[in-house]
Structure formats: structure tokens, C-alpha cells
Image (tube, rainbow, N blue to C red; front, side):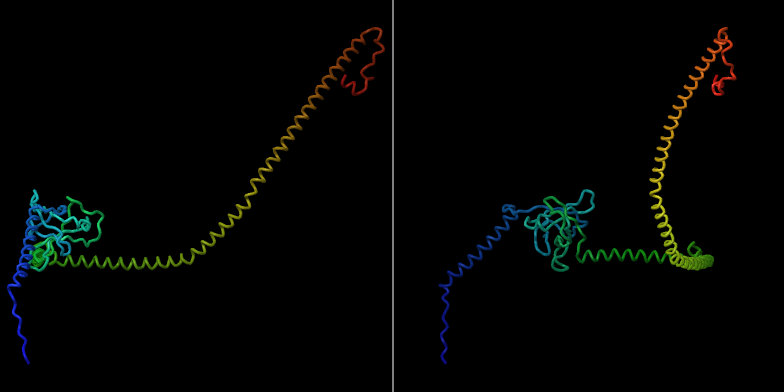
Length: 331
């Protein structure tokens, strides 16, 4: 088997290609370096806006620290300064404006290590707490939360352990005082007066419990009785109410009847009054007639008396006895 001859590489022919590749890479590196230089010196402007926050501590944070949302760089820390009262660090963040719609008033900013426990700290903006009511604008303030890294965990654990140690010391001191009969607490726990008093109170509490149980039993019996008796009483009350209602229905025509009777009596009284008026008129007429008749008879009597005195008629005038009875009476 014959081996084919390996073709020799003509480096003179490849030199042009190598020069082109090296030149391209050099131009790319130069362009990238130039872009970063121009960007860092604010020659190339990127649409950005600024947010602010106040951290309790700013360990590992400073100018140029990356600001991220879920691991994606969206800006950087551009300024840090201690507040005038010394309580907290005031921080300024420069955020690319393309991420503005994601950051609302419900977002929380805190320090975190983005890779591992020994990597540099970054600032993370947590937008997973729910959509807020307002999109933060230039100059607004972000709510700051505690840092979420191993240093914060260790510091919190140390604080908790310190509080536990304080509680243990207080409990140890209290126990020592309880064992020492020379103290007030020791005298209280070393004497049986307290236990006897507690026992008496427990017995009283037991008596009260038994009495309460008896009261509850009687109350239950009373409630059962009411449960069976109240419906009967309610039925009777309903019957009485219905009877009264029916009676009131029967009484409804009575006022109209009384009104009609009164109207009839009023009419009757009116007619009687008219009759009395008419009778009074007739009586008045009769009285006037009797008075007129009496005056006429008196005149006749006077005439007869005068005529009887005349000598021509003296013997011819009749006496009173010869006049009829009615006329004589009137006369």
C-alpha cells in the first residue's frame, strides 16, 4: 500500500489570512476598550435614572457595585455617604431606564453575594413581592431590607445567642435567689404559707366549680322546661291575640252605628225643637186671643154697668144671674 504524500503548507500564502484575523481581533478589542472608555467618561450617554435607599450598613458596597434583578445587571452604585445623624448609609443607584417598568413601590433592595459565600457583594432589587401601585421615577426611594448573606446570618445568630445567654444568666440568678432563704423569693418558696394559701385557693376554686356545675345543671333543667312550656304559652298567646283581633273586627262597625244613631237623635231633637217652637207660637196666639177677649168682655161689662145707671134702662138690664155661666165667668 502506497502512502500519499502530505501536502506542505505554504506559509507565504497563509500570511495574508493570519494578518486579516489578527487585525480583526485587534480592531474588536480596540473598539470594546474604546466603548468602555467613552462610557466610563460619560462621553457615550445611556438612558438612565437614579433611585435612592438607606442601608443600615454598607459593608462590601461602594461606588461601582453592581445592581441586579435576579442576577441580571441593571445598573450600579454611583454614590454612598453617611447620613448626617450617623444612623445609616445613604446610597444612590443609577439604573438603566429600560428596566424602569419592573421597579415599583413594592420592590425591596438588599445586599447579597451573587455567586458564593466569598464572592463580592452586589445590590439586588427584589421585585417578587407583588406588583405595586406606582412605578418608581427618577429621585424616588427604594425600601431597604436586611442583607441576605452568610455575614448577616452569623450576625443574627450571634445576636440571638447573646439574648439566650442573657436569659440563661437571668434564670441562673433567679434560681440562686430562690435557693437562698435570706432573699424575699427564697423566703417565699421556702415557707409553707404560700403553698397552704395556694391549696386553700384551689379548694375554693373547686367549690366554685362544683357550685357552677350545679347552677348549670339547674339552668339546663329550667331551659328544658322553658323549651317545652314556652311553645304552649306562645300558642295560647296567639289564640288570645287572634280572639282580640276578631273582637276588634266585630267592633269596627260599632262606631259607624253609633254615629248613625247620634245623627238620628240629632234629627229627632231638631224636629222636636221645631214642634216646640210651633206650639209656642200657637200658645202665644191663644194667649193674645184670650187677652183680647178678656178686654172686650171687660169693655162690655163697663158698658153694661154704665147703661144700668141710666134711669130709662135701669129696670131692663139683666142681673149677673141671668147671663150664661161661661159669659158670666168671663164677665
